[in-house]
Length: 92
Image 1 (tube, rainbow, N blue to C red):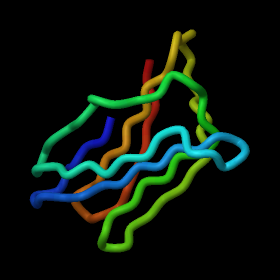
Image 2: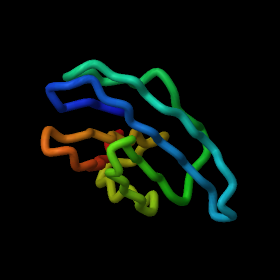
Image 3: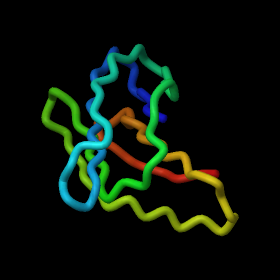
């Protein structure tokens, strides 16, 4: 789930890779302010997630949800914050 929490239109790129560096998912989202897009995803477990913007903001992290509930597949949220930073969260 990619979200634009800014007050301007934003482009947010997402790249998901496996342990070997192979691309599992790659997409650039063009989003209006305050919009959330959950229209795409993958079914396999990734190793790393990278999110980036054309302005140069970039963040890469290991996929490691720490959820208390037993999930049959986790969701990952990638919000672009109003200050231009990129965060992440996991949910069932």
